Image (cartoon, rainbow, N blue to C red; front, side, top):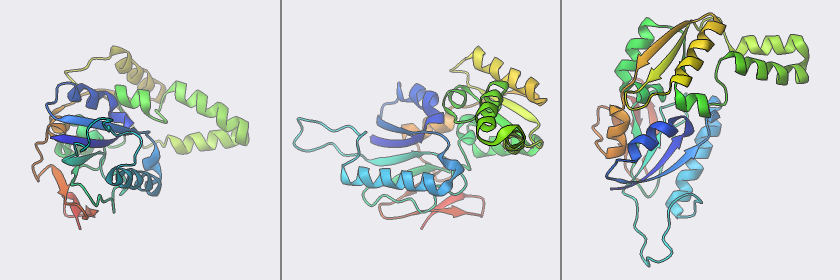
Length: 249
């Protein structure tokens, strides 16, 4: 298959690893992390990309200079979870759209929504870390991040204002720093980064074994209905509160 993918950049290393050996043709456009903090902004950005792909006018997708007839895509993949309803309403008028049934990207790193839920049920208040998050996130809780943020806030709002805003960024309810480790990727420096962050924040440190299976099946085209939603051209993504996470309308 020929697949177009729109994905959050916090999946960069993982997608790149799988894409390198995938038999499908995969054309990936990465969107910077952090837009999901304002769901309407992420929704608008993704819908804009979908419309440009539909029209053939986006600036990132492969186009041949020589073929008089372009080789078209079979589907568009969204490398996102529901992300605070950011995906609600998204639609391609030309292509099927495939989306993981996940609340956010952590399920993709852990291999399933169930694995994420199991950890969540026993570890309330967790900051998640891995190589892609540390490299591409707009904000990762750590001493380094706090010092940088404090300097910016102090310049803008003074010391008291800076302290207040930092406390809002890092609520006391977060008690765990979990590093997700895939067998296929080993980054000791980022595992240490997470351990140091946990010590600085006074949180428990945990190494959680990840699983590439769900993301690999996503990219390879094994789209069972239990784990993935496939919308037809013209259908919109909607939230589902029955446990399926997302549905089509």
